[in-house]
Length: 297
Length: 286
Image 1 (cartoon, rainbow over the protein chains, first blue to last red):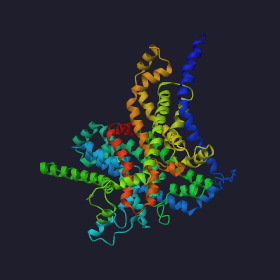
Image 2 (cartoon, chains in turn blue, purple):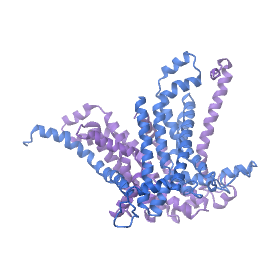
Image 3 (tube, rainbow over the protein chains, first blue to last red):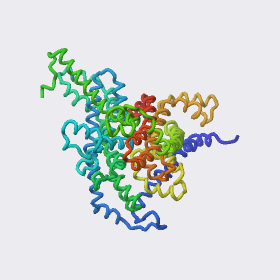
Image 4 (cartoon, rainbow over the protein chains, first blue to last red):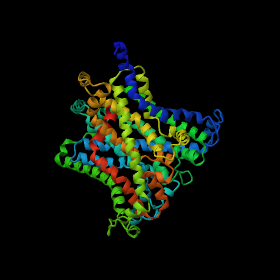
């Protein structure tokens, strides 16, 4: 073997690590990065998935999209989903995490139970709640009838004004446990000395919570918010399984609308443009929060 | 408002009342979490007629008929097999590729390391929606659509950023001396990785394996688009079509939902420590 030592060293330093990364990189580049580049390309064409040529039409799709009332309606529903679906589970999770953290028996049991809905497939969550809201024998209506609130009972998911909020409640049920577990872990890691100092200074429990605990949780709260925002712009499963965006687009969100355009109507080009809307919103949301978090640290 | 401070004078009775309220809230939330599970799982054992009669009570005459119907006529046997056939390789490939790459990112300095790592991090924030349309046509044109690979490869690919992120963190936590001692003992570079370092990241592999399993088992939009042929449907997609077909047979649908959810809940309960540790390590520290 007459390989020069420096060459051997550079093999070990340069080529070998690349060999370790290569399999993952190939799969990731071909099946994630390349399709993403193609999404941008498709969005500039009027391709229908069948023609051999993809006609370049510039920004025409984007112009259409910004004039598309269904896109705006769907986006509005996403924003409602985000506004209520971000704040509520974080607040509920925070309150419950505080209760458990302040010392209770059966902490692990509560954690196990609160997290159970989170591991459930969202299709199953959708199906469960579909039946909970069933107009005839869904438990909600059964209970309402039994307590004499007959006029309140309705087919919740078929009701134009209520369907979106009914689904949001189901989403909340399936998600708050996630916030709870993350916040409980964060609480267990906070600096107790500050807490004790504040107590000695005469700060009440609410004040301690607000001025001592919450600031220490800020990075985790930021992360959770970013996470929920991305989820909120991409919500699909639970809606598709229950209402498919109906009745009369009352629960349409960007992802269900995009799915219809791309895979029912085969509008690959316009579908890709709608996809870009979701992508940009998700990326802006996550990078804003990552920046905020890094500035905070 | 000063009154936020609890008057200490109220003493033991006040404290007792507070504790009572605390437990009441926690137990109530726990019941709200569990009730749908109890309801679904118990309905799965009810004869259809009993459900229409007394929808909320526990089964009076439990039966396995719904499971038999779902399994055979509802083709859940086929969907279950499909789910297993795609989930096993997805978990295997994700573990293998993520630990190889995670090891290089954690333990080696090479040109372009930072750039490559950022490229993978981009995937953590890129939703599946962003790539689904071109991916569909790529799979169609390469003939992968209509095979199990149409789910196995993309699902593995979208899990890699998170997998590499986790495995890199686990490899970083191992002491440098171990690696050197492996080299002194005459292992080559791959041997150091495979025989010395990888076994030490077993807890990380368990965590990632569970995430990968849950992600693949519960994945919906991806197989909805890429596994359109009926004979390829995994459980979750099967259940959705099943629901629209047997929309009035409530007991049958609940049996289907039970078949999907029981494996997930069992895996979660067995591995919950590792699962929650992985989740919170990523979120709280990372």
